[in-house]
Amino acid sequence: MTPFLLVLSSPSGGGKTTIARALLQARTDVGYSVSATTRPPRPGERDGHDYHFLTGAEFERRVVAGEFLEHATYGGHRYGTLRAEIDRVLGNGCHAVLDIEVEGARQVMGRMPDAVRVFVLPPSAKVLVERLRSRDTETPETRRVRLARAAEELLAVTEYDYAVVNEHLRDAVNAVGAILDAESSRVARRRDLAGFVENLRQGVAAAATRDEGV
Ligand code: 5GP
Image 1 (tube, helix red, strand yellow):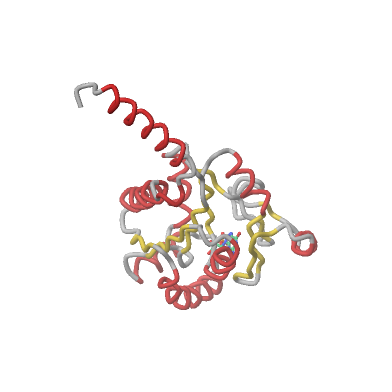
Image 2: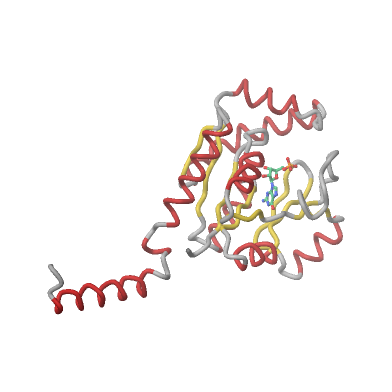
């Protein structure tokens, strides 16, 4: 298997983080790229697990040092994918799941065009609003900002390879898993294929010469 990047985007509250975490639980061939951010941790979030929480100065230092594959600003805070995270996950032989917003996803595609992009859609506006409300980590003002941004971000769906509607979590996770499996089978991604087929060919040709009941 040749591991690749799986970019998951959705408007805030669309459920991409939950899908990413569920995929990690369900499969051994995926790893999570832990992003860096300047946003403060929410209750229960752990440094190095949910995010690498950085000061603005530290984030900027890493930008200048070229440590980010992509980075963007969202809701007044900076977010970015560290190259070291991608190297770590791919180096373990796993597909790297990136849970990132659309501007960052565009940068990834410019730099790693064989990444697979999946856009996660909420089943309705009502559900999106409810999901954001039920996260009581948001104030009404940040919720309003996130919803306004969501309306913008939905337009980006046409830039993605796949769209998955997240009505029932299990179905959405299965759909993303099916995408991973299909993409893994692409001939262009199968670096091992040439050797495998050559072995097969030799075996088949030898059997033909021996005329083993062919
Ligand atoms: P939150 O603050 O809700 O955790 O994330 C806000 C937004 O930032 C979400 O859309 C999330 O996908 C996005 N985000 C998280 N990590 C990254 C990253 O490394 N790069 C970019 N571009 N966006 C990210």
